[in-house]
Each structure stands twice: as C-alpha cells, then as structure tokens.
Length: 118
Image (cartoon, rainbow, N blue to C red):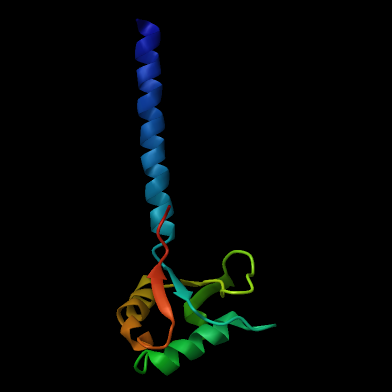
C-alpha cells in the first residue's frame, strides 16, 4: 500500500515537472516568428534579408539589426521547397509589431507563423 502512495507521489511530481517544462518552452518561443516562402540563396545574410523584407512589405515598419537576436533557416535544404526562416527578436514588443503587420505580405507568397511547440 505504501509503495502505491510513493508511486502516486512520483507520478504527480513528474506531471508537475512536465507542465513546468512546457511553460518554460512556450515562454522561450514567445519572441520567435517563422517566415515561410522565402527563396534561398547561396551565402545569404539572413538578418539583412529579414530586415529588407520587413521594410519593403510591412507598411513602413522600421527595424534595425540590433532588434533581431538570431535569424536561421530550419531543417535540411530541399530542392523543391525553401526552408522556413526563424527570427528571434530581443523584444516581444518588436515581435508583436511584425506579427500584427503581417497582412503586408498578402499576395507575395510569404507567410508568417508563430513558433508553437509540438
């Protein structure tokens, strides 16, 4: 009987740790957006590319390189489809300004999505 209580306590602890880990992962993804449909080029500067896209399509949104923490392509290269571009912003306010201006990409073939956990 005592071993069942101990097992139950361990299961509760594992569930609590799992919830905590999920919350931390979601918090770490809050500053990230994914851009889809951007053709890949050899030796591309992803930070400059993303800043150029934002300034050209998002209604005068002025961003600088110091507002972007990281820009990387996700996954392995494919011949038929460009990899998504992950952009991590230093500020959630800047990330949100890009997110809410995303309608500027309408008709360009470029889409923006949030980085949600699986």
